[in-house]
Amino acid sequence: MSLRRLFAVSLSLLLTACASLAARGDASAPSEEWAGVSAAEDFSGGFSGDVDGGPDLRQHLDKDGAVHLGFVEAGQGGAAEPAAPAVDRQVIYSARLAIVVVSVAEAQASVLAYARELGGHLQQSDASSVTVRVPAAKFDEALTRMARLGEVVARDVNAADVTEELFDLDIRIDNARKARERLLEHLAKSEKIEDTLKIEVELTRLTEELERMEGRKRFLASQVALSTIRVELNSNSPQGPANDGLVVPFDWIERLGDGLVAGALATQPRAPRFLASGPRFDVPAGFLRYYQSKTLVEAMDADGVRVKVQVHDNHDEGDLVFWQKLARRALVEGRSLVFDTERMLANDRALMRGTREVSGEPYGYLIVLVRTEKRVLTYEAFGPKARFDEVAAALEASAASLRP
Image (cartoon, rainbow, N blue to C red; front, top):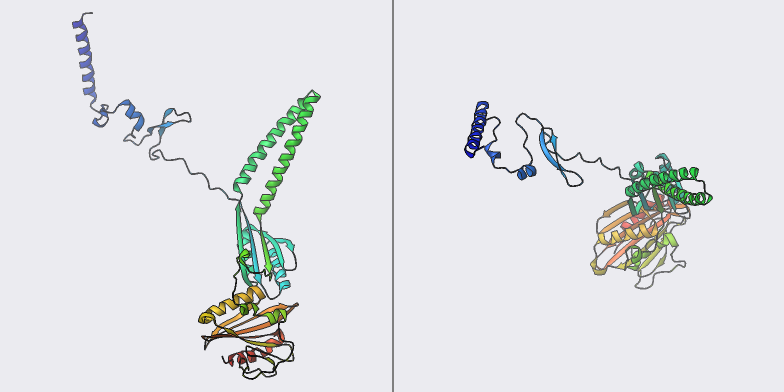
C-alpha cells in the first residue's frame, strides 16, 4: 500500500471515531482534571468514587509489598480496621496494714470475720498479726473496713500485672500438649527399642515441663482471684532511717506514755525541796501527791490511776500544733494508743484522750500539753479504764488548773 493511501485510510478512521464521540455526547470523555494524570499518578492516588455513590476502587499492599486494587463501599472511605477488643488485665493485688488498736485479740477476730463475710478465708495468724485472702472484687471494701478498726500508721498496696505471663503460659502449654500428642503417636508406631526409649525420655521431660507450667498457671490464677491482706496490730518497730521512721531529737517526746506502758514511775515518795516545788496544779479529790521535784510531779489514787506532770524546754519557741502533732505520733506509733478525743483548748493548750490495752486489760489515757514561749508542760493521767472513766472529768479539771 502506498504512503498516500495509508494516510487516507488513517484519516478516515479518525474522522469516524470523532463522529461517534460527538453522537454520544461528552459523558464518557475524560474531564480536564484527569486529562494530564499519568498512569503512575493514577496508582499512587487511586480513583475517586463515582457520583452515584457506587464503590470506590482503592489500591492496597499485601504482605509481600505487591500493590492490589479493590473496591470499597461508598461512605467507608478506606477507614482503618476496627480496634482490637480491650484486654482483660490479670492483676494480683496485695496489701499490708499496720493498725494501732485497743485490743489486739478483738481486732484479729474482726479482721477474720470481715474476710469471711466477703467470701475470703484465714491464711495465717500469730500474736500480733493476721493474714487473710479475700475475692479480688472485694479488695477495696475489705481494706476500708479493716482500716476502721483503729489508727492506721502504715499502709502498703501492691498490684502486679501478670496478663502477659498468663498469655505466654497458655501458648507454651498448648504447644507442649500438641508436641506430647505427636510423641505419643510416634511411640505407638515405634518398632525399635532404641527409638522407643528415646521417645519415652522426651515424653517424661515434656510431661514434667507441662505439669510445671500448668501448676504455675493455677497459682497465678488463684492469686488473681483472691487478694492477700496482712494486718499488723500494735507491732511497733524501732524508728530510724532504715524503715523511714521519724527520728525525734527530743527525748521527752519519746518518753511520753512510759508510765502507762513500762511503769516508768517513781517508786519512792519525795517531798518538794526549797525553791523546787515543781509544776503547780490542783490535785483531784482522792489523789495524793507523792513525788515532787523541780520538773516533775507525780500523784495517784488508791485504785491505780496515776498522774504525771512534767516541764520541758520549748526549743526555738515551737508552737503548740508542732508539739501536739509530734506527741500524738509518738504515742500512737510508739505506745499503741488509740485516741478518741482530741481538741485544742484556750490559753495555748491541747487535750488528747484515748485507750490502750495493758496486760489484756483496757487502760484509759489523758494528756494535756501547755505551751509557753520557754516551756512545754505535759499533764499525763492513766489507769484501768473503768476507774479512769469515773474520774475523767476530775482529771480534765485538774489538768486545766495547771499553771505554767
